[in-house]
Image 1: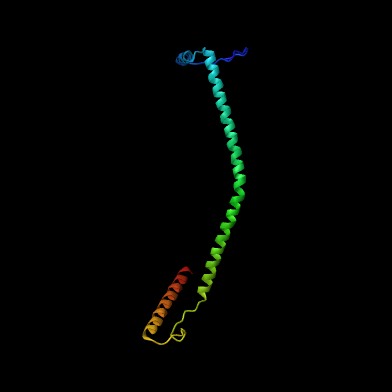
Image 2: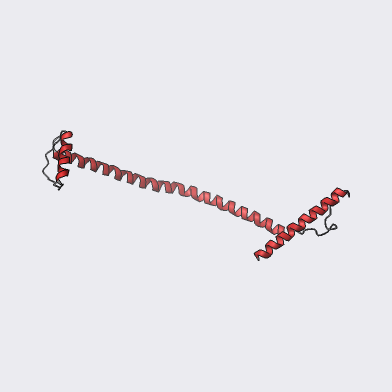
Length: 146
């Protein structure tokens, strides 16, 4: 260790047990108590400086990240808003179409160009029944919502 003339003095108070521990640690390091206390303080000061510089680095990194991410985030929000708008628009179109869809109520309203056959007649009846059921379910839902 390089000896430098030091003319300033710092003193601090410790308990008897702490003093004995400091002296013991200094002897283990082959130093005087003054040199040991000085080296401990210097190490602590270096750690504080490193922590300060790391804190400054993280603050700068946070600012840089926010600046870089902000444009990406805005673009992402624009895309998500477009997707939401298009989804709602498509659903609204389908809803309007379904509201104005007329469900056939009898065989004459249902015009299908197929040859009469017991299977086709049964299929017509089943389709009409399903359509009427869906229409009545939709009316019930509309009545409940109003």
